[in-house]
View 1 (cartoon, rainbow, N blue to C red):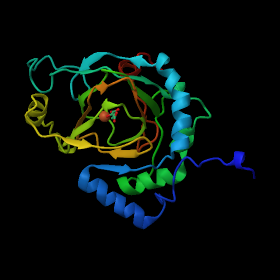
View 2 (cartoon, rainbow, N blue to C red; view 1 turned 180 degrees about the vertical axis):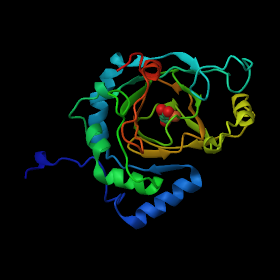
View 3 (cartoon, rainbow, N blue to C red; view 1 turned 135 degrees about the horizontal axis):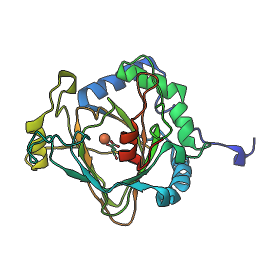
View 4 (spheres, rainbow, N blue to C red; view 1 turned 120 degrees about the vertical axis):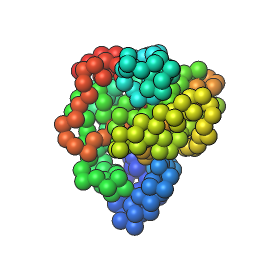
Length: 263
Ligand SMILES: O=C(O)CCC(=O)C(=O)O
Ligand SMILES: [Fe+2]
């Protein structure tokens, strides 16, 4: 094989032995202790470069919602005051392209389908199986935050999220979070904590990661946001969405909210 034939594998399994049970156990402990797990450099730079080259021009096709929402990503509750934690509005102004805008030969599809990565996720999250969304938009999304764009404080709908930073901005674009701000499993919505965070009175933690790092995050109970991008370089990040049950699809109204269209 000549030099030109060398193809970089999309996952650096020498650095991160995803199917090794001792490695899985160590990562699981890190995730349980910190609420987040960063696999530094899991996707090698040449693969990131290829994904960025493919994805960057698609910002022209991205959907920018430029809307406000509550931290629970639901409609307001008219029986509660406008300034109740449930109804307080924050701004999200980043854009995204949906799964059906990701090319079929993209390395992102190879990563999403990788059986070793899926086994790793099952092991660290203590789930039996992992499934794609059963709608054409939700599984792989690429987010774009050019200058001044941000993602407001929120809790995720899914129990966990997997992200891959493609391109860090010059400044800003910082991921801030408050672990265990609510306990959704016990029906506790964390209103006091939400108020304190939105008022700037609660300490927040910062998760630092670089392009090529895979991040696993319990975003369902951790309140989190990404601060506005500063400078000319657009923050670009992939969200890989999975479910632990088959057949899950977002409702047409949720699809319309997140993607500006339904399936
Ligand atoms: O952009 C990020 O780092 C986080 C994205 C996120 O929280 C989300 O898509 O729900
Ligand atoms: Fe999130």
